[in-house]
Structure formats: structure tokens, C-alpha cells
Length: 110
Image (cartoon, rainbow, N blue to C red; front, side, top):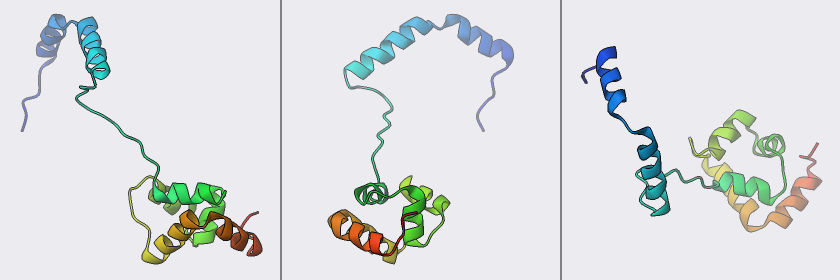
């Protein structure tokens, strides 16, 4: 278990820090593309499929027969869709116009 610092130890460390220099060093690292931690945000296939057919989250969830919460979890990449849902998602990506026509006929939209 790591040693927890006392208030006095924390204060002593804070007094020796040069926050301005730390910020400037972080900016230099980012500009040099040497950042120690990177966050990359990518659009999931689920989100891309939904946007391809022009549906809202509520409409797409209704089409897939799932809750909007489940859709949000899939779109954020926390869980993967079922195999049958994956098939429909792939169809939406590959054939958005055809899927949009089928969706319109089935009145998924409000």
C-alpha cells in the first residue's frame, strides 16, 4: 500500500514546484508530439451507422429494439452489440440509402 503524505509533506512538495515551468514543459511536449498521455476520440461503428441513416438516438434504439441507454453504451464503446444488431449496423453503414428507405416504410421515425 502506498504511503499517504501528511499535510506538512504535501505542503513542502508544493513549495518546491514551479507550476509555470511545468505548464510550459507540458505545452512544449504537446507541440513536439511527445505528450505522455493522449486521448483519442473515435466515432464507433454504431454512431457512424446511426448518423449514416440520419436517425436520432431514440429512433435508432427503437429500430434495434433496445433502450436508448443500451445504445449510448454501445456508442461509447463500453459494450459490444449482439451479432444480430451488428449485422443491421453493418447494413446501415454499407447501404444507408436502402436502409433509410426500409426504415421510412416501417415508420421508425416519429
